[in-house]
Image (cartoon, rainbow, N blue to C red; front, side, top):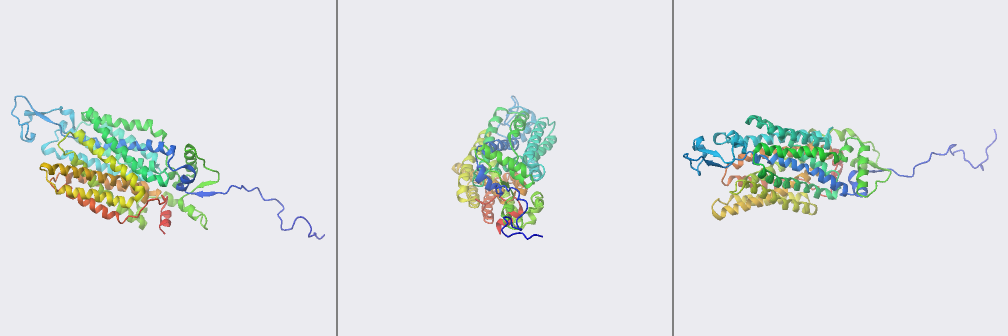
Length: 519
């Protein structure tokens, strides 16, 4: 065989075939938060539209939750002409023929079914049963929205059920049917707020998420103010339930078709294509561009991309449940503390709200003032939370409310002290409204995406448990209600010391990502 000359232009080690053309575009793995900051925009035109449309659902929850203040009220009554009657006395000591309801029996459930005197407890029972339904619904739909149903479809289901049960309530033939339908309405309503909150805030960039999350409560309080006007116009309880159920139906038809699923939910479910397409749409709507070669990935996958492990176990991403929360030490402690905080805050908020209705003024004006007094608190927490952090503000607002509740417990109901006590109650509501608002965004940031709605459902259940107990505290009268609220506020501030700060921290997608971030 002839010897090959070393001067041959091709060395033996050179490949016979040229290597295939290699795309010069490098693949860049990037998590959602970084993609928002680098390419999509953290809160552009797309997020603003999505945030407003999604947060409108808070109005539906406000209507279904607070309508009972008006439908279950005790109307005014008057003496029947020509009968023995004492207008300043109690109807319980009078004969039924000597007095009548001013607005007729159709004014409220109390007048229609005579829920007075020995049956007065039934009014509180309806309220408690409604919040029991909210407790169950928050847990059920919190889990469903994290699992196969998703955020948007869960919101659709709860809105539809709320509308159906609200309409059926207007047909209640008796008290016990009414109780059952309020239980079912509570079951659906319990999932509205948490589904809307997570769906509204997850597509927002990290530096804007706090302000956006805190702003959702404007929709809730503003809707309560609107409800007071609606109730003033429609002063029969069946009509009021009908009118306040219509917005849920309209929301499904007119608003939900223009709302998108959360890109984070797509991602943790392994639906990378849908998540990337949605992020590209967000970038385009905001006047930006998502370049080729950018691959959306979970936070821990990005962290591991430079190491030997590039495979992501999507079982961890999909299998989030309350059991998983308790299996991981960090999230277990966080959940216990978050549940305690939400329970204590609920007792103070609902308790002070009920005390406001005891003022000797017009009921509709009382509810309006109660709602309006919360708006400045929301504004302050939205501004200050991104400056001072979630933790210090939670401590400060709970102690602020607790202090004024303590001052209120020292005041009597005589003369000028009664006015000071009322002012203490308003300032207490102001403080706890800021806490209640802040706890939603705080809880959202404490837990990974795979269990975010599940944990929010658990804290929402704690809120409803507080709401169930509040009527029993309020009826004690005297200094005790304010004293109980003061203890809850001060204790809540102390508990908040043991939670970590989440300001400007990543919104982790899975347990592995959270634990890697803590390492």
